Image 1 (tube, rainbow, N blue to C red):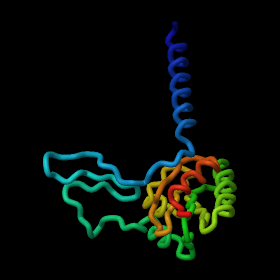
Image 2: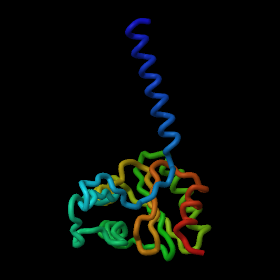
Image 3: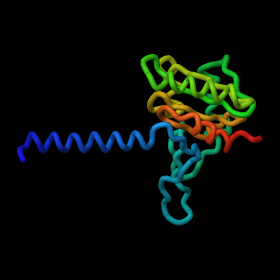
Length: 175
């Protein structure tokens, strides 16, 4: 097999692998709970990584620890007119030329119409870059589900299915 053909085969295999990965992970909601990324020695404080906040090491500085509504506080700083839903808020980050963002807008609006106390709020990522950075949004569409206190409960990158949004809300919204 020639060098050119080998390169083509490798490129196709890598593209297929990436496509399968994206198909598997797009639109899936992931927990927003902090995770321990490193434990140093006996009795040492763990290194904790929390989405939307820098990782901390050693002893935690409780004066800078994220509060329950840290996500909503960041939203209010960028969008003072925004209103939190009574039970949950579907916070969507979109961009102007994003086709999946339009489909996501329709799905989230439908869910907000069906589930009482749930509000859909769409944010233009291009015009609110500080908020995008503060909440660690890496691509559009990204959907954050905030609970009644404004804390991030879960998030999905990519266009979620309506069933996935309703299922994620079931764990957040009390009956």
